Length: 123
Image (cartoon, rainbow, N blue to C red):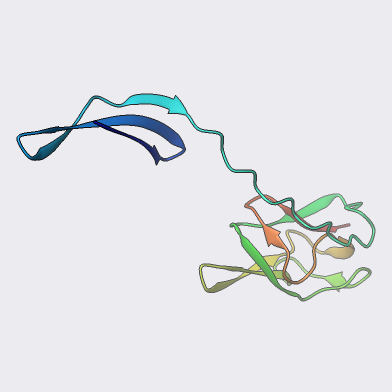
């Protein structure tokens, strides 16, 4: 008999394999939770203004910041691109939800982002 640990979708299974008549037959798996690997801490994002605006511009998908198109104090119109996020080899513009002035840029080029991560704020 041989014992193996197999992890599927974050759940570890202890499996015992017994040889019978020259073939291997798996025994019933016993599930146990494996410790999830620690995610690397994101680098501190430079924040000019520190998220002080009333309207948030958030990442729509997980990826990384490809380009910052706007700067603090710049006037923007609803729909203007503020930040471009690269996800799955696509460049996705994150746009201003309102007319206003950029109050903060809360990310930098190369920063990893998750969906919902604050990228900028608009007043």
